Image 1 (cartoon, helix red, strand yellow):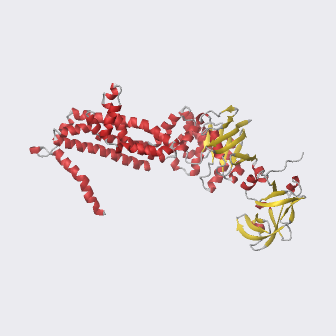
Image 2 (tube, rainbow over the protein chains, first blue to last red):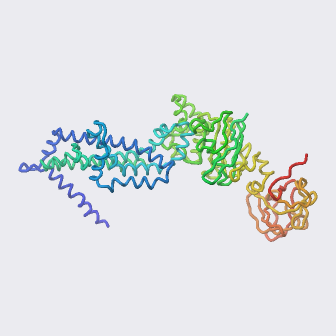
Image 3 (cartoon, rainbow over the protein chains, first blue to last red):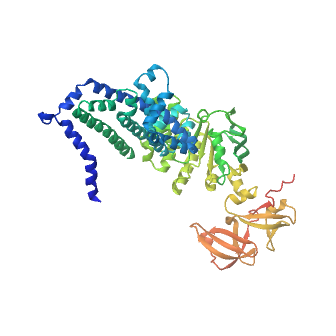
Length: 244
Length: 354
């Protein structure tokens, strides 16, 4: 089986290498970092990247504020609801993004600061990140003796919020970190919602630049790949550190 | 002075009555054990007192104050759990200081108290270690220090020794008792281990099917069981069908002395209980004749299993130095007339004549 890594590595590495080569191509002027330099000096790129980053942070916060207490309560008091939680958590993977976006725009109306701005994207993004956030939190909480820890904290006089913030969250750091980093990769790469709802996120910008400059699009894709890849690496390293 | 008072507590899960009208009072500084087989309701009683469950009937008072409707967090009751109750993200010192932290005490006072408590349980040098760096016994000591750091009105112990190995268990059990005495806090201790309950308690409550079958000092529980359940549950006893005959009992055609037969009517059929350490081995011509079936060496004592003619089996534990019989030998058994326990067929004891 040793030789198996050769085709596998080729399968994954070849497109990356090709993209990298294309991103460095400067037509008749040979190879260089022209595409990267242009990108760095393009304010739209930065704006879209910042927007995606902001959305990622908002999504992480909204997702965790909703899910930490919910998964905690399910594990502690309503374990018989687990099948329902499991089912709901995988729905975003089953329902196509295009139906989600149609449904969501039809249902949600609200104040301008939410519906009229890119903040609206946080709603579908929380849903998209749900399978990953839920899994990470559930695994993290199952590893703890939740009932005993909760009761110990209670008997020592801790209120529920105090118990969640001082005992639960610190013991879930790895799980929370994993959930956060996975959410970042999802939000940075999400295209369908943003494009249909006409918001200029990072993924939308990559698509847009692709129609005007092939080399810049390649450069940007590579950067986006590195960004999400380092996030994944963060999850892996975080997990290993916590395991020690 | 009464510390904890549980009055007519009832707890029902669906169609199952887990606690049926349990009342129990602990004096100030008293150490009471709840002893019983699993499912007898002892843990449920403890959880009601802790405030983790709500009773379906009855009241709980602590130092004269009704706490039935108060949440666990506001009861000021310290609790030590079976295992794994330390917060993994905190050092021993932080664990012990946690109760004071949520009470808003200043860091300096918290730190001082935590050190005092860790000192008390003999873990001062381990204060900066995390739970996973401590042994099981050490973790339970920290848990004890943590429960006591809040200056609780009552200490609850939910089988805190059951996850530890035998040697540590005995050591820690004595230490829990020493510290509880030193602090003077009343304690309620749940265990299914009789030796544990008998050795450290002021009083033991033996529980059966959601009721307290007998409440008394350890020696009384051991020597004077008042029901068939307690007689059969606590310690080992041989049990025979017997008939009261004058100042003794008649077993398998032999009349033998038993002082407690006195309270029963002549000719009454009774249950006769005898502990292994009260059995004396004599010549077959005296006492009840039997055959030595096996011999087990326990170190300081040796236990014989003897098949009696027409009465069943009995265990006899004698000092090893005096153990002379071998399997296959015929022996007679007898006992100190004060030793056997006699219960009515329905399990009761005769009411003493006034």
